[in-house]
Length: 195
Image (cartoon, rainbow, N blue to C red; front, side):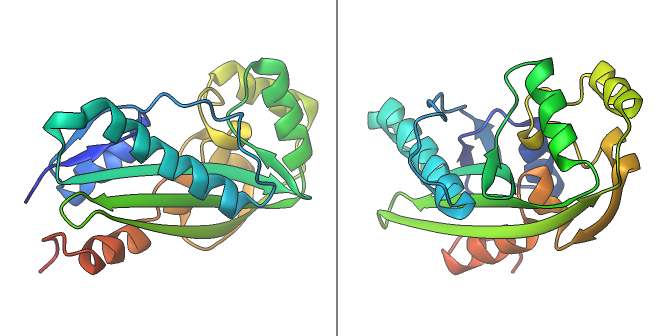
């Protein structure tokens, strides 16, 4: 199989690539995620995923790979988008907002076929319901530092699973790479995988 450039520093996405047995190299795309005009979480994540791919394309120029993948995940509740918290206080505010409520996790993937000059983007949503959280539970979770570097200030695959009462959709969407959709995306774009 041909190597894919993963335009992400996310360890979770790298773990998914390893799980799938995909040859890849990591080239984190450093983009300013705060400059995005969309209030819709699908449009928001789609724009950021595409910008990550384009950033890698700009940086690689002459040694362009054949495939580039970018992805972005956000949490959304009451028309409010939560990305990665900047600090502990912001993380606490996010967890308080999520406490006892259902929210939406959205991940968008941008997959670029360099030979065909074709960008394919797809967005997947999943709904997660949190139990009501006490202030002590929030402080305990914040002390774990799991909130750092993740949308919505929680890791579904970590200790935050103690707070989750229901998941509607694929948990891999919340973690950062919806595996079913990504698998279909690879096949639809002619990447030689799973055949």
